[in-house]
Image (cartoon, rainbow, N blue to C red; front, side, top):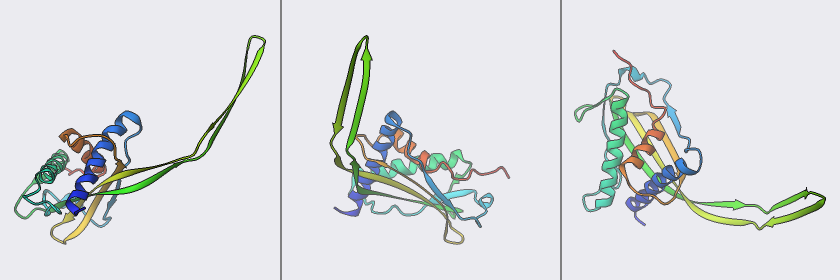
Length: 188
């Protein structure tokens, strides 16, 4: 499978998992890293690094790229940054990936006892072990100091692939989760 298709599968997984997680369990926890020497108060503008594996010939991947960029741009603007095509302070890049995983459920034994009136009852239940394969999707967002050409922040979110779609709302939710710890701009 070519890299563009693998990336598409990865982000589909992430988006579907983000939607499913909202219904079934706690949302995925993001991870972030920040360059401790980076002074985010000097960054005012952002622009884009080239998108990996996106070509004009691959319409679904191009549409996904547009949705991810729109969600990131909205998040950056919400945090006080201004988009600039000419000499931005920060260049934003992202990666998507998917990975096969295995989940194992061990043997379970349940024992119950009780009574009703004068009668006494008991039961024993045994569950067999099972192994399931699934895919996990990951979205990684990078902020690069354009002046130093050095990464100053990275946010990552991973989640199990589930049924879902490429709806802009799902992309926005995944990006928002990944960028939870991105520093907001302070007023000058």
